[in-house]
Image 1 (cartoon, rainbow, N blue to C red):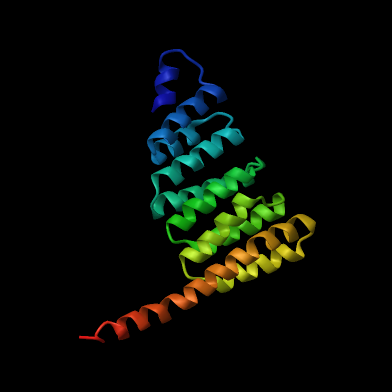
Image 2 (spheres, rainbow, N blue to C red):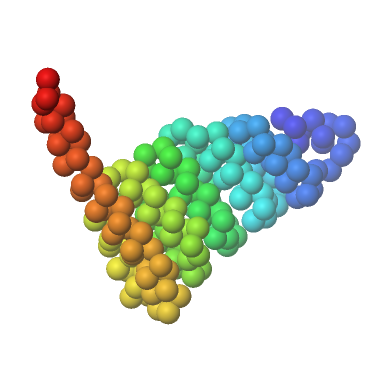
Length: 187
């Protein structure tokens, strides 16, 4: 491995050099290499974990999304606090891979550690919307509204957008049926 090669050359890889190598893995979407580097790291920090998670998200796919979730769990077990961006990156990876429920569980963990920001709420709602799980999105907004002033403000901001999206989705099948039903007229 890269770190072992450095050791063989008489170098002592530190957290900074490991993070640089992880950033190269992230840039190339080389998530498996990032995981291997993280496993070899002497003292991974929040940047190490976040960069490996970002490599998983960039690579895409279900195995990489599951790896991102495992990294988040490992990070928390190591008592390294994930940032809002770290949580949101895992949510993006899970959502893109079709793992809506785990993405929402990560959102709830985020809310336990941080006040969610607009990006985190948007990511959670996008996961619900992409899977057609509007009820989960409504439940998420209701939980936010009850969570305090910051959550209430976010819920008020996103609720009209969510309602409009739901209304548009409800009208779309009726409009398509009307178009399909009217396509043979006048001939």
